[in-house]
Length: 334
Image: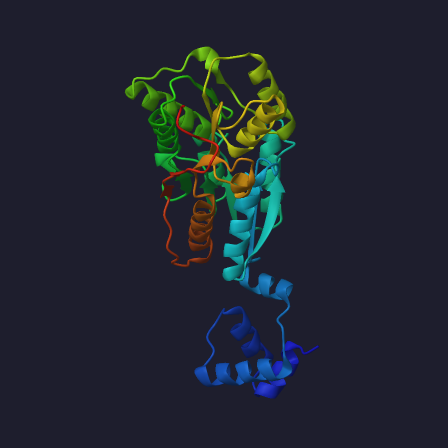
């Protein structure tokens, strides 16, 4: 395997000149750079990544902090971020805070990324408060926040307009003629779930529809908890013809349990999801849902993190709008 000395000898320059060329630290004449580049190609030389990191004081590693890996939502984020990083020759270290029970536990997962010498960190953080996140930004400058909205952290927050998403859901079901509508929310302590739910209720009121309190059930994150929730929800024997679910995972479980109980979707009950994750088009029937541009949001956040961390100038946007995706799980009231 070729070394820096081998490259320097073939190029007819000093080893220090080769090191400066590889690291990008210090000046190298155009003539020397051309000789070094030819020698590198001829010898098929590959710089040692650890040595390059030490010389440049960069690891080329980006940390990604997520609160869970269950379900397709976070898989979509991780996939989008990894693909974007690969385009820019950067790599990812993942911290999954699913087992965190407190703020201290969540901070320990964050510190794990810091201690691995990540140049920048992307956090998906709808459950954290703005004050807590602002303190984290003070501690670690190269940080961007996914799925969080705060004016105080402008330029670092990347989010979907979930209030608009809730309004789109209300309009769709009302336009189909539904008057008796139930809701299974996300966890309302999460900023995105609260915005979505508030938008839905407000739009329903503007359209002259009300949602009784007993027809609103707060959701859960895990499949096991969501399955129990859906079963308990149907056992309540509420009077509804449509259900708006805070995410596609709950909507999928609801369709499955309705079918198990001999209730047809959408003939007897319309079911509307939220997110438009990968499996939404493959449920039976295919799921009508609110499309949240998750991939686009994650890629844009990643580009801004690269800008902050490596002084690049990649295009990005912070706010994304959801849209209605009608498939076959919702239908006009017959």
